[in-house]
Image 1 (cartoon, rainbow, N blue to C red):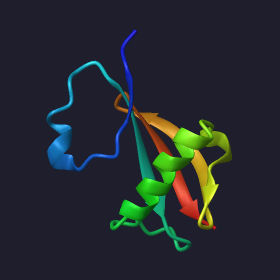
Image 2 (image 1 turned 90 degrees about the vertical axis):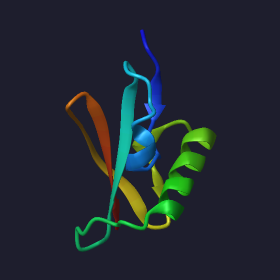
Image 3 (image 1 turned 180 degrees about the vertical axis):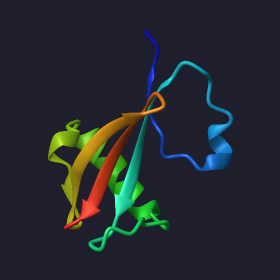
Image 4 (image 1 turned 90 degrees about the horizontal axis):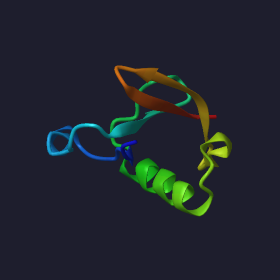
Amino acid sequence: KGFAFYDFLTKELRSFLPKGLKLFRFKYYDREGRVIKKNGKLKAYTLRYLVEMGNLEKLNFLNFKLIESYEEGGITYFVVKET
């Protein structure tokens, strides 16, 4: 009932999304726990991983791993951290 959408968009483009989508977003952190703001390459690797593997539980690339997932405000967040 509804569509799932892996959100790799900028904040500006998110305003164009239709209502009723199940959103999945990613947060990327470095080894020290700081948010990685310039994460275009990481988003590209994540999208490629989703297409090829289809399993986020085993997400592992460029020394990054999926650490946790949580839901907040109807959006599911995946926390990816450099190991």
